[in-house]
Image (cartoon, rainbow, N blue to C red; front, side):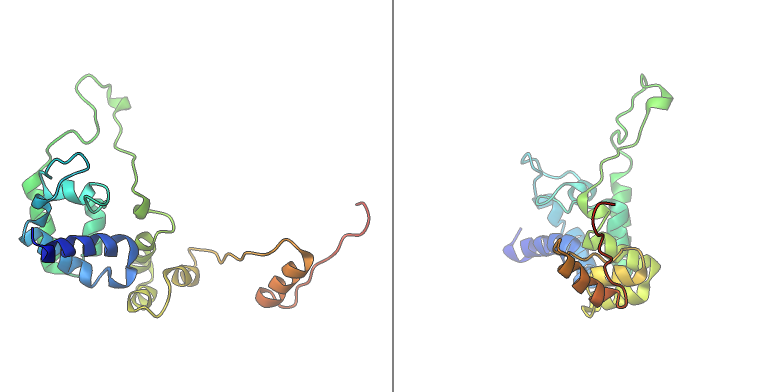
Length: 195
């Protein structure tokens, strides 16, 4: 793999986890290049073994793979029809090989469970999760985040699925300053004496 194309993989990893502004614009183009040029096939996993499929590259942890689930990868590329078509083509080629639940014919049906491992970028306050949720629930705010006019945190607060957090020095004066700034009209009530 040439350095030029190695940079495509590195850029896709960086954008997927740390660059919400370019997530829905440059990321799908990078994925298209990775699939068309089979860049994943030139890479190795954490044990030095070559990836056997595009899906194994996508799901493998950073920095060898992209550390994304396939549904999340498709969500990040959903506005690029060519990228989605290529991803689905790779998924069909991979088929349903393997044993994703770890169950076998000797495992009772009620004990067979799906994998419960979640990657850090797939939930919580991560930029990727926040932008995906904004895109789903508040596309207007997602556009502002992608355009760089609003931070993912500010957009999540405005959308109502994250609460504003304020750090305050634990002194009465600092708490009163915070109240004056965020809740004008409220003031501290001081207790006197014992109860």
